[in-house]
Amino acid sequence: MADKILEELRISLKNGLTEAVIKNLVDDLREGGVLNRDETEDILQKTKNRPDQARDLIDSVKVKGREASKRFFSSLENNDKTLYETLTIANRLEALLPKATAPSSARHETTDEQKNEREEYKMESLPRGLCVIINNENFKNPKMKRRGSDFDVVSLQIVFKFLGFVVEKHNDLDANEIKCLMTKYSKDGRHGDCFVCCVLSHGDQYGILGKDEERCTFKDIRSPFDGVNCPSLVNKPKVFFIQACRGSETQKKVLVKTDASGGEPDQESDHVTDDYTIASGSDFLTVMSTVEGCRAMRDPSSGSWFIQSLCQYLKEGSQRSEDILKILIDVNDDVSKKEANVMIDRKIIDAKQIPQPQFTLRKTLIFRVPMAQSTG
Image (cartoon, rainbow, N blue to C red; front, side):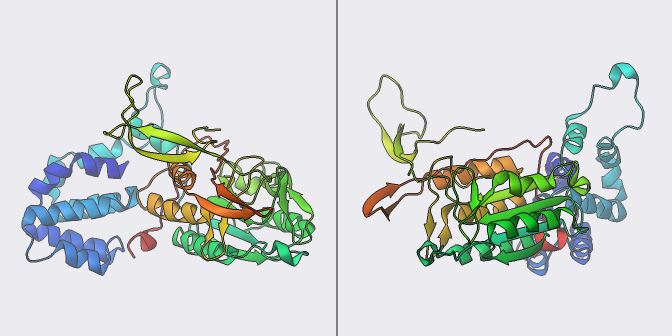
């Protein structure tokens, strides 16, 4: 990818870019929406010397991904053709393009860059797609009110608008209304490169509850979007985040022992430091907010553990072009380390939790931040 090439050429570019070219590059990238005003002013600070300006420019562009890096190289070709050709940038970029034909004996041989390009889901449409949020906060039984769920809704709206999605929210639906809504969205003509659905409600091991306290199964939620029922989303990622309990059990904590260096302890040594607890269900890889049979924690004053962690890591990780599985592992680690004393059945319980991603993805999924968003 172009951003990888930019990283490979970082030192050569830092040594080769002149002050005049740096200024022209910054002006071009600012005009093209790659850099914002604050970034421009920071790069061109008078107190910085030329190598520092070059380094900061390269790093500012690189973290914004391949499209930003391509624009950088295009501007460099216009402003310093000699350096562009000396570093053989055209050949490097051309190597990323898939070959139209190849001898049969060599068809299985591809570069790592070509392999990465081919195996990543396309994430270029504007808008990226639809993000549907179903927020069941109020139920037939007033005692079941899910206080704090509004914090999750706001966090989800902010992060998915940032990621370029059209976000639509639906409040307090009964089970049949949820099923009908899923069928309606499966036939929607606005689908882009990805579909996201976030369901916030009470639930059990089989599904989530409507406001009427009737069950809507996970199959009812997902099946309308399969390849048969939703051809417009064939070969495109369909992502569901479910914030709901999946049973009445609470996860127990187990002790992780680390030595003074932060690694696993020597089996023959009793000396350990910096111990901490995680949920006993941790370290299994098989996006539910909790494992089957267990509760999901929600703070009435700040939102649920899972959704708040998800939104934080999804925004930060996407800005670094991290794939969703890496982000979800970070979410698992973060949520697993949370702990709270909660009142359940008139007893104080030391609560723990671990989310559970499940996937059938065939390619790398990266929520690439739209250019206008990544610079703001």
